[in-house]
Length: 585
Ligand code: ACM
Image (cartoon, rainbow, N blue to C red):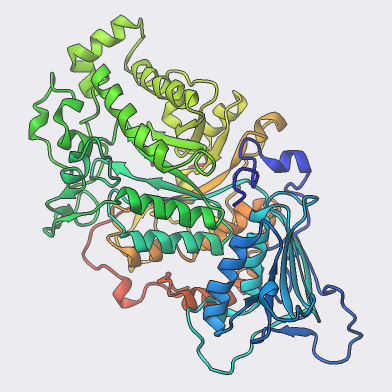
């Protein structure tokens, strides 16, 4: 499979190609595609059609797939999804006796003249043709084809024995605005079984999102098997009880919670993502957010300040004072962890490794003789520079192994090594500083695209957290801040929505917070929309009517436009809403 050449994540492609904000996006059509394509017409391919008869191509039992070299994964995906949804064999063209030529087929091919993730889709009397700039472009074209076939294409089995899907003749030209279109899923605060993770990869693919940021470790749980340190999962993946609601809530769920992915589970998740042209960014969060690791291996903590043997996996939420000790032992330990991580997440599909770096309280380092000795030993100014020293260590270590470090924007404090990239979450500010200094940036400001934040101000929102971020707010999110220099804009790799799961106990709660807003986010990341105020939200809402039907067919437990269903509400469970609009930072 072609993975290495799919996308160049080292630069914002639009800065070079001119496919920028001012590109016209044709979203006023009846095809109701989400995200909206660059251009859509109704010419069709090799369209000898002169107006007589139906202007739609029917998928039939005789329809074949002709997959040119390099497009095999899309061929497999089409057969397993559309074939299942409509009960059609979609046999390989080469396997059809007599070789019926190109007629009545779905034809897939790579056209290197197109942008790597771009594609052209034509539907006409002889079938459907998808040409992509790379295997990824072909795959995104196939996602469009599925949407063109209507909501039934999103089911896993036919709902009627004689339903015959048709595709209206069309001619679509498309490609993404950003090479990094991501979603971060926190499986540490609440574990999601592997099958739910695979399902989320399908949901990302259905929205042409191509980065899965996998938040695997935190104070409340360690979720990835590390063979040389078995206690990380034996001890670190379980907690005896869990705060129910915001940390100020008095409620506890006394059910033990936990789980982890075995190394084979991880390999399967990575392969599944790769088959869908999704890159996985594993996150091992250091030096804060590490109490689960310290509970498993107390020597990792600041044992000259507190008795770390008494710590257990954290059962509530917030910013934890129990951080890693900045010792050689800790560095060697996490090198060992990362060696296994690198083996599980190959460079071709995981060029970036996320090392967290957020919200590391310095209380213990201030008190710790060992930490203070480190500061003196290396001539550092303070604890921020000590954190920076830890990050630099892993930047050097990862760079030597052909990977790139990415971290939350706190890694800017105390100085950032030159190749490191930044996830800008506390607003745009960190991202602007980083991009102007020549670092690559993923924009994910909490004020705009943290999907744990409530999506309505009404009293029925379950466990309401944070700012009100409606579907429209997300639709109007602009990843590139005004006034950024052209040079710095090239360093905005793209954007991602982040899903922190403190108050999302299971897949249904995750679905509720993520959808429908991820659909709006996907359009922001993929489509070249006008400036925020000029975006046609009414048209997006119109297309959402069809998209809700797709989500229904997929079984997504989204927030209905009219508000949460009774079973989606959580009366009496405390959240922490923040009043007023988010600051423009
Ligand atoms: C974060 O939200 N602490 C990255």
